[in-house]
Length: 248
Image (cartoon, rainbow, N blue to C red; front, side, top):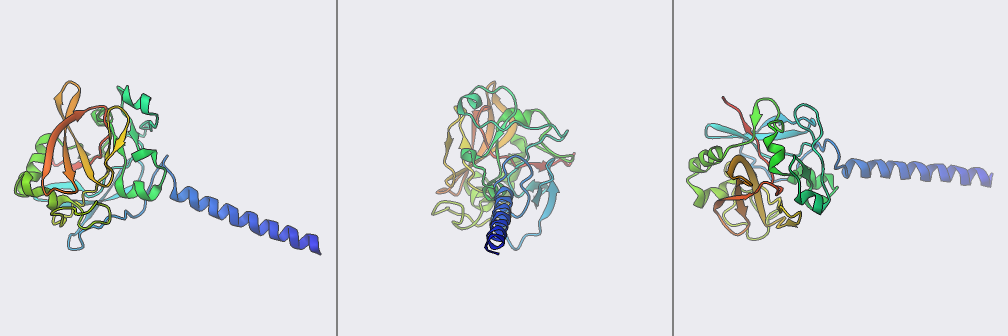
């Protein structure tokens, strides 16, 4: 009788371990679709649309003026033809890439973080022309200009784009009211040398437009400024991506 009780206890323990393990896999999966709700604070007064990427992840979208943008950062691990985008974690390998790649900030495997902040991509992944699902594309530098001009210019547009409050942005998150519903988050970046930096402080988003042979234009939001900056950065660096609906 004692042996039966012990064996039954072992079975229960094994089942409990398997259930916990499965839960961990679901919550910490960096190698495939990371679907589910973002923890971002969206604007409750905005009516959002939706779109899906090649992984099947679902995102909120928002119309601002004449443009429709993703209201979340891209997190696909596949191109639109189904081929994989390499996940490059090694610092030295990242620094010398001449082909497309993505990574998670600080190589995190936390699915909740990935769902909220998305992934970081080098410019080469965008330049394949295959990172956006049908009907969407990587924004040009001009697309960003149209958005920012509509919001009153670079000195005040940042606050209208940033997620309000300090749940994800470092205090004081100057000027942030997320008036547009764009819900920009401080996903940080991976520098061209493979180092990660400024998660929680700054957010960076690619354009497809080159600013030189080895550089491309991006937009930059900061936790302590109401403005949005435009600067060129190495194509090797890892930045967040917001796709824009192709109305052409």
